Image 1 (cartoon, helix red, strand yellow):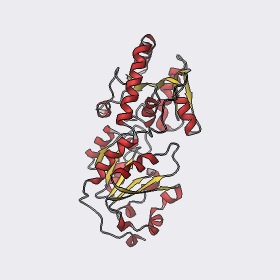
Image 2 (cartoon, helix red, strand yellow):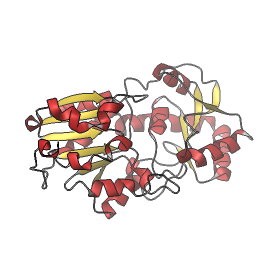
Image 3 (tube, rainbow, N blue to C red):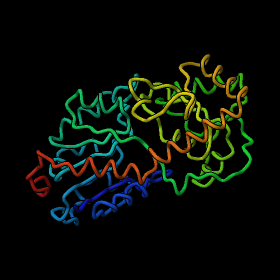
Image 4 (cartoon, helix red, strand yellow):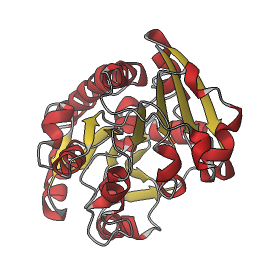
Length: 312
C-alpha cells in the first residue's frame, strides 16, 4: 500500500518517528508542511501525483484545515489524525462543535482520535472515528539515571483558556506543596528535566483525555500522579491506579495520594517502574504505528471520484 502522510513541521516535539514507523507495513511518503502550506492545501497538491497513493493521512493543525473541506473532499481514502478533538465538547472551548461540523462536511472521511471518550463522542455524531492514544518517541524519552532532585514537578503551558482549570489546580497545589511549575525550551532540556522529577503532577482537568506529557513523564521514570478522566479512558489505556500510576479526583484526593507516596517510597518507586514498562509497551510510537496501519488498511467505502482540479 502506498500512503501519503502530511504532518505539521512546527511541533515542539515532532512525531516523525510515529510516521516513519508506518514503513514497516506500507510504502510511506512523509512530508512536513509549514503553516502557509497547511493553509492552502489545494496549492500544495498541484505538484503531487495523488493517483499514485492509495491512502492519504493528514496530521495537520485543525485551525488551518477546517475551512478547506471543499478541496479535502477530493482526496481519496482520506484519514485525519487529530489530537485536539476534545475541544469539540470541552466546556468553554472556542471550538465547541467545530470538529463534528467539519467532519460532516467530508463524506467518507476516517478520523483517528487520541481520546477514548472523544472517539465515542465523534462516533455518536456519525463520524467514522477510531481510537489510537497519544504516545512518544522511545528513542528520545529515555532514562538518564540522574538524581531526581525535584520532588514534585509539572512541565507545560498554563496560559491558554483551554488550560485555565489546569492552571488553577496547579497554582493552588503550589501554595501548599513544593511543586515546581516549569517550561522548557528544547527537546533535550525537556527530557533532562523529566529525569530530575520524582513525581510528575498531571493536571488534565476538563480535557477528557490524557495528554502526551503523561506518557513522556512515565517513560522517563517519573511516578505519574494524574487526574482521573473516567468514562472508560483509564481502562482503554490500561492505566491502573496503584499499579502503574496514582490517580486523583480533586485537590483533596491529590494530597492524600501524595502523602501515601511519601510514606511508601518503595511502593511508589515500584509503581513508577511498572508505569514505564507499561507505556513502553502501549504508547511508544512504533506500537501506535501498527494500530494506525490497521485503521487505514480497512477499505474505504466512500471514496471521492472528483478530481481536485475541478475545484481550482
